[in-house]
Length: 303
Ligand code: BEZ
Ligand code: FE
Figure 1 (spheres, helix red, strand yellow):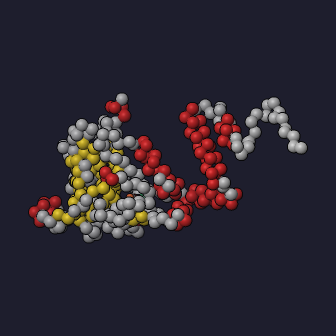
Figure 2 (cartoon, helix red, strand yellow; figure 1 turned 90 degrees about the horizontal axis):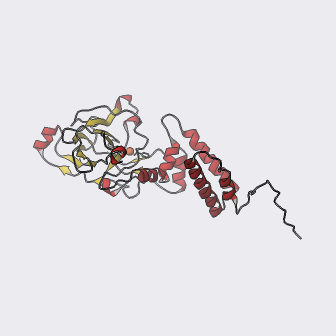
Figure 3 (cartoon, protein in one colour; figure 1 turned 60 degrees about the vertical axis):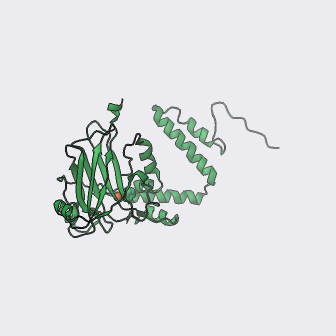
């Protein structure tokens, strides 16, 4: 008959399948920082519960370690494969959404993405940021306002986007292209901004690494719907990182990184108005999108 071994005094609770998470969490008791302890405890409990749920095999565990190792090896100064992994699993969007709850009609935020890698050149309002001779000409305009609808004169509007073939400047072989399709604008006295460009195309996220293999394993496509990135800042207001999405773009309902929010989708209709086109310096007809930005008061002002 099996005899039950007495737990020797001083040995404490030993590891078992049933008590695994409790035992590891008990080892965190000495963490001096309560937030570190809370985060690690929850992480341990969720990971243990996940492993029990799927009954992870040793082979799967080895595959997971190899996958994460390859993800690390793919990272360098310009490529962040771990962020891309976080993006395709919806983690980046969840963190973004929790941390920037846009109450009261403020513009919703979305992911920054990996292409905000060079400083946008400061430009005059109305400047053309496109590469010469490429794509459907487009006017993008809007107004930056605060929580009470007040204009925010002098707001800084940083924009960057892919071209009509779905490439960012930094993906083009020609180094002279860097800085095109980007601009740092200063809103006028009424918070208004406008610039000329071309309508961007949808494009694939980088798939030449482990994240690409993961997408294949999930039978998921790598595309993001056409969009223009914005970071808008002004003293006294919380900055917002967001996009405007092109309403007739494919993949709006299946963005590879889950970045689409309905409030950020805009029509880019054709405008046939030779006088206006000439005044703006655009060919006629041209496409036009309006994207107003409503900022929240910054945390200090809210407090
Ligand atoms: C982007 O929109 O630039 C982007 C966002 C997440 C992953 C890859 C690209
Ligand atoms: Fe993008």
